[in-house]
Figure (tube, rainbow, N blue to C red):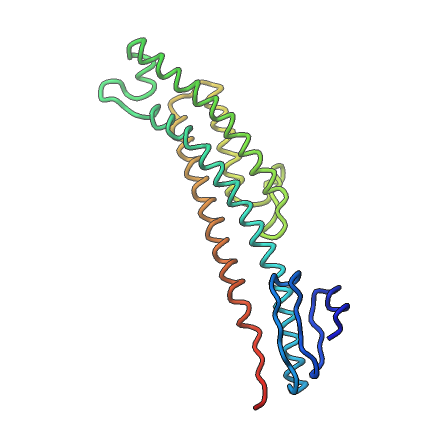
Length: 226
């Protein structure tokens, strides 16, 4: 095999009289094929399949890394948003004689109204922290290269879940700013569901790519004459 040439290109080149060594830096482990006495046609076919294997491995490995990083950011957002979700559930809870959040503010005692105001204040503080993680997610999706088109907020190009999260961010900001407490719990619930769905999508894609990588070696088989 022409070792220097293969090392530079990341491919495989060999003759029927030599052993083949695919370097550790290419596929993560040493793979040695003894191809002495193999029919040249079989050898040529194997060489093509090995090079195809390496090319596909590189692409899939890059996809795997990108899905993994996306999954991690989404998981951080999901965990951080848990507190916001709990505040929203409390705000959206309806008492039989008070009609929910608006009823609390209009008819409840001063103590209950203060409690609602406190919940809204705490929710707003926690939401600011969530927006930091959401911005990290946004910047990451704007740099996507291997798992789909990159996100472009102005042109509205890229992952649909990211578009939905940005839209819901604006709705949550607006509800907090305008004091629209009636719909706040619903919007936060929708944001939580969208985050969960996006995380599920990334997790499924991660598993699918890993499965493809595991199936790649099946494409490389050497049949020798007895």
